[in-house]
Length: 387
Image (tube, rainbow, N blue to C red; front, side, top):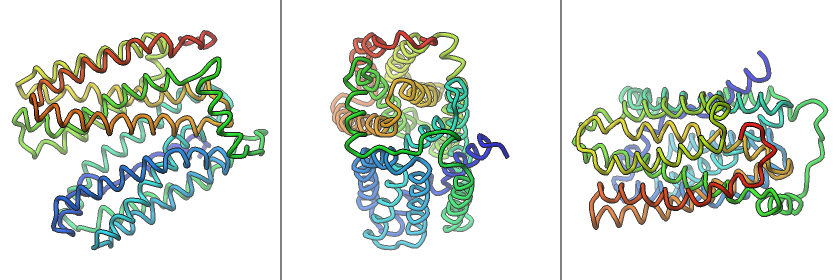
């Protein structure tokens, strides 16, 4: 198998998680408490936020493949504890291991691919393709997970362990870095210094990160409130799993066509279109009443798939080579911080004025916050031909 094929298998297997669609149910059944089950979700969220920036520093100093291997080992430990854990403390520890695994791999996978390929055009193409593979894996495992759980409660965890083991084997078959690449790794202090320059220097990426973080926060807000929206429309819960699986396919489609969209329209125009579409979709969702509207969140799922590889390509092109993983971790931290505030505000607004008006207001806020930042995001990037 070629290098890119082995990398694609690693990416596909590492994102195959069969227990996701039943995890909250498992928590509730084992702990006999909805409150404790949701508390475990909070443990995961907080642990991911705490681990994000250190994980970027680890990747930029220790090495990308070694960091990804640590992430898979952490994922194996987390999945094993989820399979056998019966107490809150053991399940919370499992969530911490899973969160660390996610943080170590988040962003590092993309930087590692960029490090392996000497050609930026090849990276843009394969980043979109491998991101699509991620969503396909999530779609397949989401659709199969609940069926497997109904047959055997441990089956989703066992198959996830197998998938992670396959991912680790393929990862270790890949080189540390491309041939002729420098083996020198910077110190943490050097990484922080370079990341600061990349953020606020002459070609600083802070406005670019802010635009993407705001947009990804908006699409994530739609994702996390999807069940409330479907219930608001009166759809039977039996259709929710199918719609989630279709949503992941929509995200895969967005990642697959990201390169072509950016070449055809340019990053600036495509990002403007993404802003208008995200805002408009949220406003229309707030006005919709029929079952047909259940497909509207698929639009934002498609945009999520487009935005992630596009952001990674732009950051790889603009950031210093010694701080790419750190900057991607910083964007993830920004997004999670914004999402935390957005979900709280959205919950308060939904209780006060209703879900429909809260969605409409959120759509307007997205437009007001992102449009003024867009010119600054590309102000210093006149040397990128696809813009």
